[in-house]
Picture (spheres, rainbow, N blue to C red):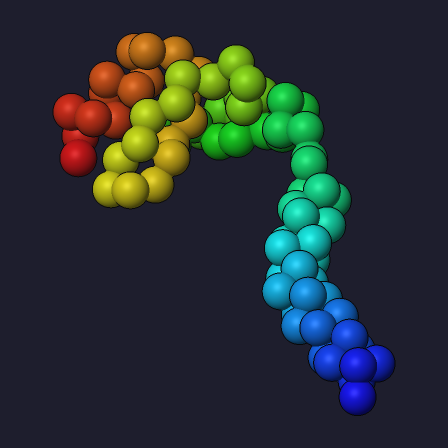
Length: 78
Ligand SMILES: [Zn+2]
């Protein structure tokens, strides 16, 4: 009887820890370096490296521009 309660306790502990460990393990492979990713400037249609682009959030979506002038032109347009 004592062994059974020990087993049940172990299962309860495993069930509590499993989602935490699973989430932590799942987050690790998503470490993609975004620095070489190319993004398109919607104003002049130029592809810019994301880390060097001017980032603006518009309508809840991130937009990337090659320069401040393009970002301002896009903001004025919409
Ligand atoms: Zn541009």
